[in-house]
Length: 185
Image (tube, rainbow, N blue to C red; front, side, top):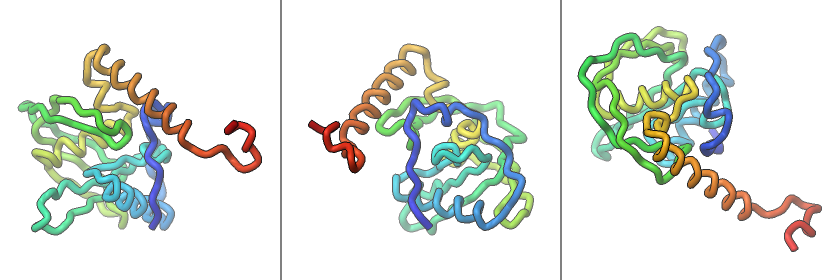
């Protein structure tokens, strides 16, 4: 297992639609393990493959927040929402690709999702509460949608400008590549 870098908004890969997974192999299992490790380290409760630069329909999540409960990591290959409740609920969302920014997003309170697990078995589960929010948020990533896309244009623009500044600041902090010492003068 190894940590993956999480892409930061704005990045065009975060707005791309991910392709369906067609092969369940060791490379996919390794990617899922890396994503879980990266998610837990961040720390976060969900991560989509596009957030680590892989445009495949794969998400991982674990919404267990109580330290007295065992973790429940779930890997969902080609997840699809097949039912949503009419009842909605707002939830303050954040995103590992948009660190330190949060906003209320209203989504269906419950959803039923089908997916394939890493062993090729079809799965189906109804999620509610934080699990429902998380799975919808991560499936949005697979469709090139970010939680800020639910916000008005002014608030979305403010967050995007702050993220652009953060990315510029982070780029300035990186040392120049070897052989480019003059660039640091």
